[in-house]
Length: 182
Ligand SMILES: Cc1cc2nc3c(=O)[nH]c(=O)nc-3n(C[C@H](O)[C@H](O)[C@H](O)COP(=O)(O)O)c2cc1C
Image 1: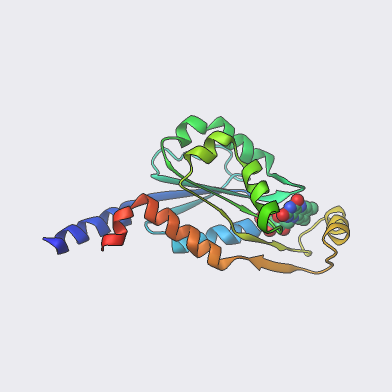
Image 2: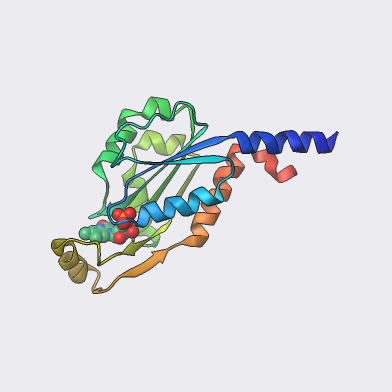
């Protein structure tokens, strides 16, 4: 009996569908999304808001939303997407994350400011997943700002792979808390 129940639960987990909706200026958040997608249970679809302005997530059980921070703000289109879809998102298992270079309290503040208050209330898990400074992809002005503010003049990789792993596990557990029993 236990084996049948366990098999049934595993089947449910594999049938669940997740959409990760993201925006990325220089490719870091996209890389993070691909890594996250590999770690999550079930079927995962990536949707880049730069390419699809209104992704249809109706058929998905979970929606994970992520973007990167520039001058303290998340991408405007991502923020507006969240505001315009609050009600529909409230019916899903929501996860939120940001990519950024700051750590600790400053990063936490950026995460808090990035998404509408109501979406924070709906979300099951939130995370700060590190960042990258990609000099090859930056515009001249961006390079100048980074050199002045961060005092860095070459590419840096601070993607937090452990945090990605932890975030994926937290999302899977909140979707299927009975996973602990198997
Ligand atoms: C012009 C510029 C401004 C940035 N401003 C911030 C900032 O205010 N706070 C922060 O934590 N990181 C900041 N960053 C770092 C980005 O959040 C980081 O590079 C992130 O990984 C970018 O992800 P993306 O390539 O997906 O856009 C900035 C980076 C650039 C190029």
